[in-house]
Image (cartoon, rainbow, N blue to C red; front, side):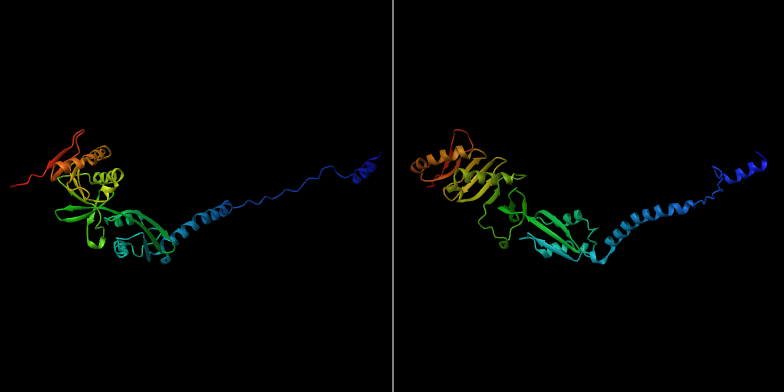
Length: 267
């Protein structure tokens, strides 16, 4: 085959591979590549910060109203005056521990519950100390709660004239709560006598003298022994009344012994 014929054949056959043209790659600016993530991160961070800034500064959330509930002795006006330094304070920033400390300065307050109510209200629920007895002191009469705490001076406006009167025979710290425990013990053992209890004299931590309208004499007792000793006294009452015109006092604090002091008539 001649060279001319070979050239004609080669012209009719397509090549198996074609040389591709060089592709030009366009490089992206790295700062532009980071712009999207930065924008998203800024949105995640800035939005909460802006929201918090608005919550902590907006006038809508300034404390404007105080609601007091559960109070009987503590006036609502006293609570409002005690919390006057917090007027206009942002409700989200209002320090509840500081509010509670101010309210707790009132001796009648036993417990405080605080609750913030949007947009600008603070609700206060008080639990007040309940008078359980009256204490005779050198300064007058004071109110005592069930735990034996001296709450405040007694006034007629407080009522409680029927509460048992407590007195202290010795100088120094005494357990007034123990006197109330004895009153409860008396109510369980001798409810008819307990209904006439007018005064409890505190002799020591465990010793007390009871003044009962049901008996013409005071009775010295020891805490925790009334269930055993009072029935014995009840049995001996007829004999005491028969043998003695009058009895000045009875002491039940000694085991298996009843000590009484008869009234000696002077000539």
